[in-house]
Length: 446
Ligand SMILES: *Cc1c(COP(=O)(O)O)cnc(C)c1O
Image (cartoon, rainbow, N blue to C red; front, side):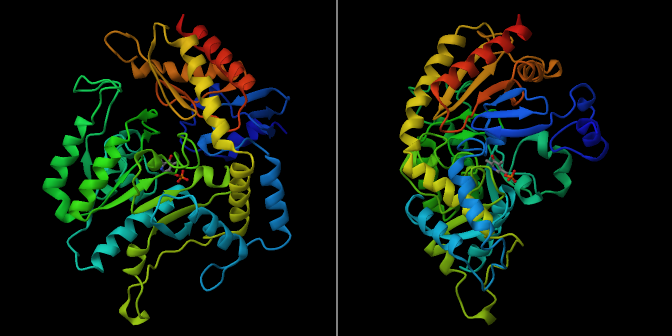
């Protein structure tokens, strides 16, 4: 059986124009190890994007594998209302030691979007139950991405994902997002004092009274093209949320667990959100699991005699799934025992320096921006004027296809190429990735 052809007979792939598969059929992966995927013919692909940003510690990590295997023969699943199990308890305890201060209650879901839904509903209900029923709306940043279910799409602002569904969505308040590469205020990353926060201020003045919460991707707007903005923005946001009783939701689904060089992106700002959602790296990309983590204060607004009807009636069948918890416990074990963050910061510096050496002066590289191991290369048609390529030419996609031929999985966001590798990638692997990236770019752009 030709697996790739049979796949196309049945499967509708996520986030894909299926017609593109005529020309680029799905690649059948048979096994993976560390940063490498291997296809049916044993051709290797270096997975420099951590398979949709979730593969935190490499594929088939021994410690995580062991943790899941040990759990598998004990308990695969149990209803999580009224019942519990050791893995979930340990996981919540271990996370409570590393999350930003004040976050202490853990509500489990089974994917990123669902944890965002949970955060939105929790915020709404919190205000309803604390005598602020007029606080019903949500604020979000332009270019934000929080998942693709209806609530999550409503607070995402990217036309690519949301435009057609507009009539189905909540009417959220959109705030102009920081755009540091094309800063309107003429500042550089060094001189920035987040003047762009002004548009948040205007929105808060006008709408805070009726707003339940604001949700942000802290420091990195991932799907928007790994747009990176300074931590001072989060500090200002924390302050204005405190002043106006608006709940601050941190979507750390992509940034959590060391991606930005610190355990969570909010750590860079030295402030805590009121609600934080995590997924992706949480299980190292092994199992679908997410958690909405909040404060005692919010939790307490739901804590009452049953007949007052204040409970948070939100559930998912796979909430707190034991295999997911086992994977997550494996991840935390590796992070701790192998001093991953410290090492990752050394490799991050190496990656950024060498990427700059290789590409900074390239005629089509507008900017190389980085935080932690995340490095994004903004491709432009004209560097001085910062003019984009025509999206119709799909330059990023052409490079993607070329890179696949060359053995590199480098899936761009529009015309932004990026590296978001597992935290334990080695310097040798980085050298190879850069070499393959440069080669693939050259073959398309020259
Ligand atoms: C991936 C992602 C989500 C959605 O998570 P899913 O598990 O794909 O539903 C939400 N927010 C951010 C920042 C993400 O990167």
